[in-house]
Length: 499
Image (cartoon, rainbow, N blue to C red; front, top):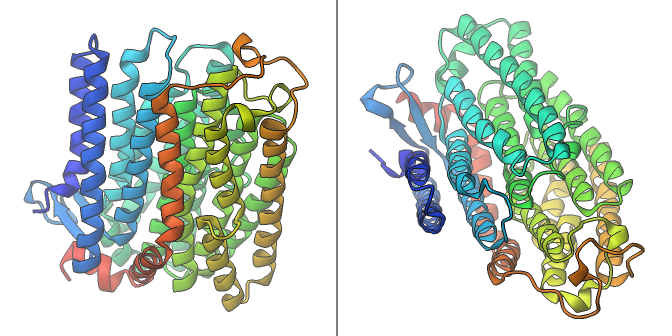
């Protein structure tokens, strides 16, 4: 049995329990969290190489074979996303340790953060639909509290919207899973994929659309994204950063996994995915252009960039799906870095409103460098990782004849560059139109944030650069992942069911 796979989930859960037990010793909580998260990053990286060499790795918990028992699966797709996600979580955790805390609830931030990590890991590794629902609930239960950490009225109000929408989505998800179980007699994804072939095409299409809508709410696709721009900017920046980098991407992962495994080549669903991709790109970038707060601009760009990932899936080709996967790998650290930069600025000045900021290029060059790297990468400027992600998607789009959506993706890239330039001009070049809240930010001297916050932000920006430098080996792994996704019977199903 490959103990690394369950360890990705069990270690954060155990660490969360220990962290609660020692709640009076925050520094031990922090050291424990760093050690566990560092270990899981190394373990996930090992899983990438094992899955690439051996094919999908399967663990049947308790020795109960699928489809009866609980199955965990690590293929190239899930292990790649697990690795980049855990590396991002570690960077945000270090940022949180360095951030000055004024609230009384700091002691339970660490166990909740570890539980959130366990939910993310379980979402990537679970092999059945019901445990995917359970993993989402672990993740979301922790996020409900983290989102309102601090207790401000605007946080609670926005957090309530987040909670209500996600509870509705979870209810819809468990109902859909129940209907699939009623039709197939199974919730193991590999087994369901086999049994759905005996279900009528109309009912199969209905299940595909229902799962797409459910996970689409969690991924914040058009028109189901309205909850995100109001919920994320009001949360503490460490929470917003990990939410921005991970939570919506877990939703996209679930869409890609279920659509390729359970409903392969379904023309109805593929058409819906392409339409949703184009609409999500347009709605997100237009919403970003209309904002005047840094965190709200970045929140709308989360929505816009989800469209690119769906674009790759909608092409339903090896090059298209591989490009979508590469785009996810690029986007997770890039978007998180941008929110960490926003956190640095908010810590130093007390605000993220563009009208209260200006001239930070001279006063905080480290924040400017990190933003430049991540912002230009998000816009797709060469030779950064975002350029390669967009280039691969455009090539796949032209090869598949998806001219309209490909053209939209190029136009949205230009508008993304415009909005990043808007932030740069207002925050790093311009002069403040209003006084920032913190008196220390009103002078002309250098602004300083705690060293660990700077180190973790620059470190994550370096990860985005590394993705661009290592584009060739990462692309080969993405192609391998796409081949396994589009031929699930040969890889995933045979590994899980032993066929």
